Image 1 (tube, protein in one colour):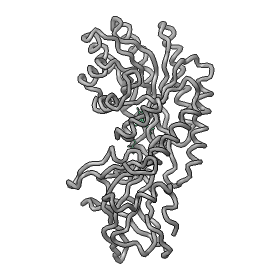
Image 2 (cartoon, protein in one colour):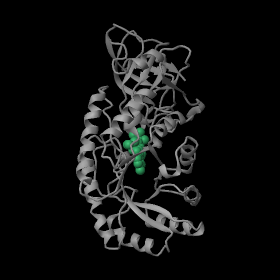
Image 3 (cartoon, helix red, strand yellow):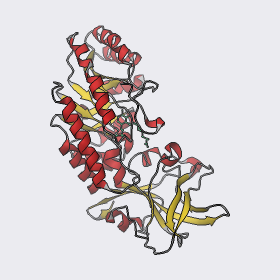
Length: 397
Ligand code: LLP
């Protein structure tokens, strides 16, 4: 079997480094910067990328994106604080999320961030009240629910009518009333949406944006001009393939859609909030095989990481390629790769092809784990969290 057929040479060099104790996340910062550069280059000139730090909030990554001139999308006061600590300026920060507390709203207002994305009429009122107390003006955008179903796991679909996110289009008139009655403490500057995550077909993005853009005419009637349109994140990757060129094709299609739909829109600023697309490919989770356990029914490879460190397979039945670090020419066989957690959902991969000389002490990498990996890790079973290492200039830090 080829050695790490799907992972870059950079990963294979360090995944087997015995000085790095397993389990650990390993990131390739240069490759990530390369992807970020391509992302930005393909977009329309008036597009501003706000990295959705929920995908991976490690300071090393945040400093990288900040250094590249990206803004950031945060969903909690914790994320906002970290973004500021890592160098983002308040005017580079967008605050999203469906359940902002009074404390969080006050913090966002006090920091005077670029935009608060509003998810309900109740929240719009609350932000107006808090801004009034602080004698501030909150710059807000309405997150719309465009009622578009997308082909992704139902748990990460967000722009359909039965999802908790965004405002129904029928709520717009009341939203405008609330803004008018806020005595200048609310500045409605934009519209925003996010239809879901891990979406590889660009058509739903097009449909959602076109539908939501129509609302600007509604606003014009009230002398409100839309200055920002935030298309959210959601662009996906092919977890079954290591072919990065495919990602770039999808990105080109996505950028073409943005160019097209905004062409004559008169919207001055487009915001984007990508998370996964920027980081997923450039992180792996490295683990050591503890046991190879054949039963009359199945063969298990039991490793020292699992759902506590990478919950995506257990939570969304997500697929992550799993590869042996050392080279082997042994016959391929099927194994379930499982973790140590006391739950049957603790499976990293069902029926994976691995060489049949795989044994305790071998290392495996779980691929495309740079997004929604370490940030969703827990210390369930009190096993502790994995380490995190970064490859930069051919060295580990
Ligand atoms: N903007 C908003 C308002 C969001 O809710 C999200 C993701 C993003 C941007 C970034 O989406 P992305 O470009 O990364 O798809 N834990 C799940 C994904 C949850 C996504 C939540 N919201 C997973 O592991 O697949």
